[in-house]
Image (tube, rainbow, N blue to C red; front, side, top):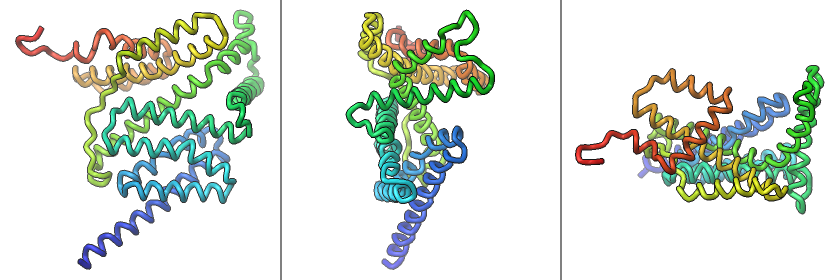
Length: 325
């Protein structure tokens, strides 16, 4: 009995130490943005991961305590608004991601849900910062205008003109119009990539240290979107072709979101084929680098994900057993 009490006491001490450590790390990462503006933004995207690991190691109490401590610390060091913004932008996605991993939910459902929370949290932060509760779209437009202003100031400092050479005259205005119209979809697509990165990293950690992370055994990763989603893609294309400004904006954003989803499905198919045919990892690394520098290949991968509805590439690549046609 005394040994059991000692074990429980040690476990609570370990959880308390890890909760404090997670809160300190996240507060430090978020504060790094004031010292390293660009690097700090990317580091802040890692904020949900310590909380998910706490959930896997110590259950929901560890996650809740760490989120509460971090929120209070940010509120005390900066303002209550910053604490609430952190909870909206990173706390809620961490909870959903942790629960999705614990329950072995389908990866496309978890990733899409986390991406939606990241997007809504980001918009909520913009609304909090601008105090425009009645007009959230105005807050988003102001943010995009500020980003474009910073980009134009940077190009002016390095000696580049905003309009470009004669064949590209007016391109800056077209880019501004496009970004203002497509910002929600682009934001969601970026959140999708972030959430999928969370999922893959956490799954690799669980496979590497299953005992320390809740004894989970994640099923094989398989991203498969519902077939009916293709009709949403077709409908979004029709809305964009109507020429009406509001319908065009809705259609464009839905197309961007669905292209992001189908891009991840195309990556899943490519990863399956690489494993199925035992292709070298060097080729996989080169393919990822090409995706980063060749936008056409990104669209090609998204097309593979879209056309998987009709061709079922993963089934076609599996050898047929005798008697099957």
